[in-house]
Length: 100
Image 1 (cartoon, rainbow, N blue to C red):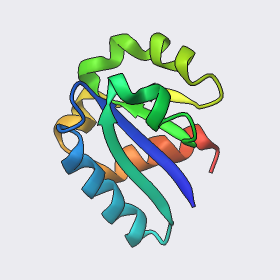
Image 2: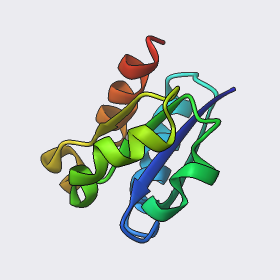
Image 3: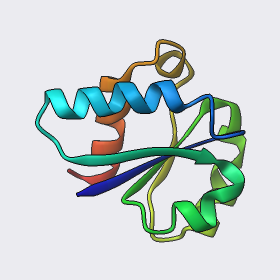
């Protein structure tokens, strides 16, 4: 099972997107673990992830977070995708980054 981690300022604002991504993965027959955490937990919670997606509010921390977890692809979720809570789109981004 692949592990997708979403990071945001507090770990709470992405919880709805996590649910939408889980629903999209299930509908498409993928088995992914999708969880959300605070950006401050990146080194401990995301070190073993297959991909890390950042909420748009912390996209400015991308390089800092990527340096903490050097073997994990990291990218920010587009603001429009995040605002629409587009679980299918966010899942597609994660899959692209994982080359899955």
